[in-house]
Amino acid sequence: MAEQNSNLMIDPRSGFCKSNSTFYSKRQPVALPSNESLDITTFISSHAHHGKTAFIDATTGHRLSFTEIWRAVDSVTSSLSEMGIRKGHVILLLSPNSIFFPIVCHSVMSLGAIITTINPLNTHREISKQIADSKPVLVFTIPQLVPKLGDSNLPIVLIGHELNTLPNSTIKPRIVTTLEAMMNKEPSQSRVKERVSEDDAATLLYSSGTTGVSKGVLSSHSNLIAMVQATLGRFRLDEGEQTFICTIPMFHIYGLAVFATALLASGSTVVVLSKFDMDKMLVAIDKYSATYLPLVPPILVALVNNADHIKKKYNLSSLRSILSGGAPLGKELIEGFLGKYPTVAILQGYAMTESTGIGASTDSLEESRRYGTAGLLSPNMEAKIVDPDSGEALPVNRTGELRLRGPTIMKGYFGNEEATASTLDSNGWLRTGDLCYIDDDGFIFVVDRLKELIKYKGYQVPPAELEALLLTHPEIDDAAVIPFPDKEVGQYPMAYVVRKTGSDLSDSSVMDFIAKQVAPYKKIRRVAFVASIPKNPSGKLLRKDLIKLATSKL
Ligand SMILES: CC(C)(COP(=O)(O)OP(=O)(O)OC[C@H]1O[C@@H](n2cnc3c(N)ncnc32)[C@H](O)[C@@H]1OP(=O)(O)O)[C@@H](O)C(=O)NCCC(=O)NCCSC(=O)/C=C/c1ccc(O)cc1
Image 1 (cartoon, protein in one colour):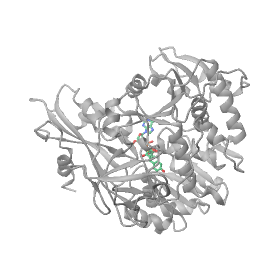
Image 2 (cartoon, helix red, strand yellow):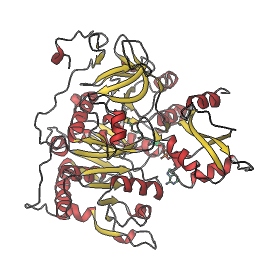
Image 3 (tube, protein in one colour):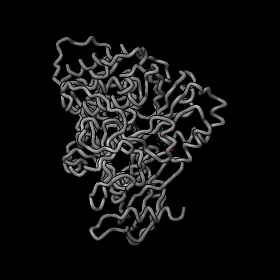
Image 4 (spheres, protein in one colour):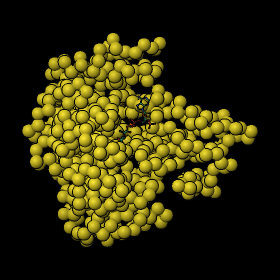
């Protein structure tokens, strides 16, 4: 970036340019292909490397080589095309982690169709909402999750299992085939192959952004290509292919970017766990001599708390790096980890779904020791720190909202121009909703959140969704949901509730009412009853006052 802006006065220490109040990345820029008709799948599958095994299923030991992966993608793409799937169609993937997850994603994307994913823990109600918003034409799922699709009547492709393993249900699902059958078909030479351009949408992942309920984030092929280039540069894979453990979900941008996309270009091996299980994760590190473990802070907390027992039981000597993302890491946790596992480096990442998994990172132990930092801006990324009241762009060491601009910033929210316009300005700057400052050396520090978001175990919980549900309770007059801090899970949802006159509704019945309707990670785990919810004169909820009230007794 700096080279292209040779007329700018960029301070080499902080990356800050006084003339336009913009921070430029201090990282070496990464090359981005100039070919406009390039899709992400062609881009990663044509990367040269010496790797052989792409994925290992940690439960069954089933291995897929790179050759098998790309052959399978070719076959499934061809089948999808024969089924009438075309550029721009949305395909839903409802599945826990599996070695087949990336095959589905890349088959869809290489056709120019759009892959949308969802957490399998979500309820039928939540899944139906996302189906109504994203309008998929086909679903890939596992037999056990078919009932969660209810009466959507969408055509279904079953992953990994035979048709006769479907759970009994009164609703007859429209199973059209299995992924296995699609993978076993010879690719057709005559399939319809539309031209996919870099700017076409590739992924549709859901995020609540800075406000409101969950929205579909459209990332393009070029967003993903830029993400791959930045991610590969970070992992320093020049010392040869590495072995990664995949325990965090592939349906969020973190897992999708790292495991289902970027690492496929690197020749590294990914050992896949279908879901998080501490013991299985540690067995997999030991058994496959894993070198990299990407995780979210709650897993790090457990590794530190049980370190003595873990180190006695498992041989973790192969492990070189932990990658932590999705939520901040405190000084105490970093020091605690380094004390217990002195040979393992912690690398941190800061990113959003809206920035296709790229933002800032610490790329060495030394950088991570700058406690509290989210790291340096990722390659090719620009930042502004904007005063939330005046809109003025601020210099180093001043706190304001972080805005990001660069090649990984999303195209926008799917079918939601209003939300797009309030998040992404006409010059391409993305509002992160995080209050940050950037220090003299260019390191970003996240101080607070402007956005209305609860992060439970690294999962987003939008308060607006829970508030809307609370208001449907016949005995609730008004409600507000806030993040309550917790050492183990980060934050959990707490509700302030105004009962209707005469009601003696209990906190447990409020919690049960919500628990029945949402995924477990969204559950309200604390309730307080109040006479009224504090609001400003225009009726906007004063969440910060409630957060202060809730945490004042801690
Ligand atoms: C591994 C975790 C941390 C813990 O797993 P867990 O303890 O098994 O809990 P679960 O989260 O799976 O399940 C939540 C709850 O559901 C329960 N549950 C479980 N399966 C069931 C069941 N089948 N029936 C019913 N109840 C159940 C489970 O018991 C639990 O309940 P509770 O114990 O009360 O909390 C898991 O929460 C997890 O994978 N979190 C990661 C979320 C995540 O990927 N976040 C990233 C978002 S994207 C992002 O921020 C980007 C960042 C990024 C940063 C840097 C980069 O370089 C790139 C990107």
